[in-house]
Length: 127
Image (cartoon, rainbow, N blue to C red; front, side, top):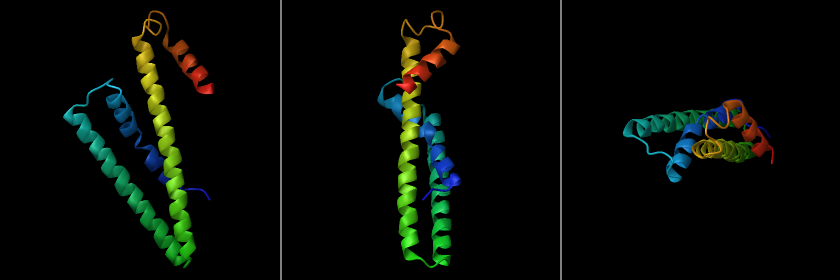
């Protein structure tokens, strides 16, 4: 059973949170209070949208009067959330690798232009 596209896109919108978390954990960046506050706004928006989506799914399931449908949709939502958050983390780690590589002598813009850098990212992604 598939998840709603709106739910998946909402969870995908939390990607800046994973990117900031990865960058802070690997000590690549330090967040200012303004950046932290904006991430807080994203968290509130994602939670609000996710809860609203869950309430709509529950109401739809209640209208169909099928109790097992509710638990099935919750399980589907959890699986979809896990898959999308994994994709967000992968995207964040790709960005982290790109920043680290750019800081190395081999990734210096005078040695490797942006097009070749993106080609390298695609090669690594295929491995």
